[in-house]
Length: 154
Image 1: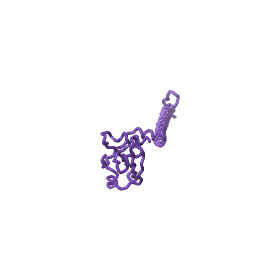
Image 2 (image 1 turned 90 degrees about the vertical axis):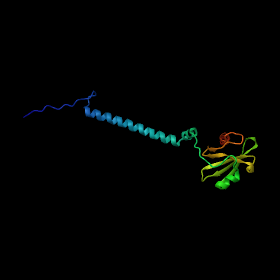
Image 3 (image 1 turned 120 degrees about the vertical axis):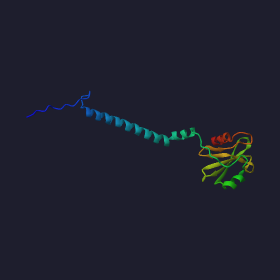
Image 4 (image 1 turned 90 degrees about the horizontal axis):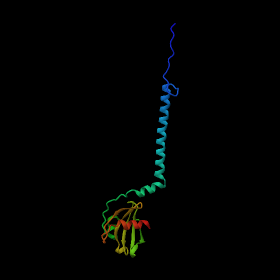
């Protein structure tokens, strides 16, 4: 009869066998990584849907699009190119002028004309989602973007 010596495993400093210590360390590491990923996903969901999302979008640069309109285009020139707007509203502007807002929901923008009245108003730019998406150089040499930004603040 041959006696076998007991097999001893090497122990970790905590007194646990080495493979159990590695397993415990792996579980803790995996749990930490999973908790970090879950925290990031929850934070992204909150930021994208909460009030911070609208503030973040307002700090981003607005996308500009190329539209075929010039500062010399009047109401008739615009409707001859893209048709009648879904609605047409007038809003007072500084210096006794008027903003004429031509809403095209199918195109997702509002065209803005500026002048003393609709018959003497000319294209000033386009707005979408509360941003200036197209501007032109006005007859006084200034970019219409600043005028349109003032319109947005009303």
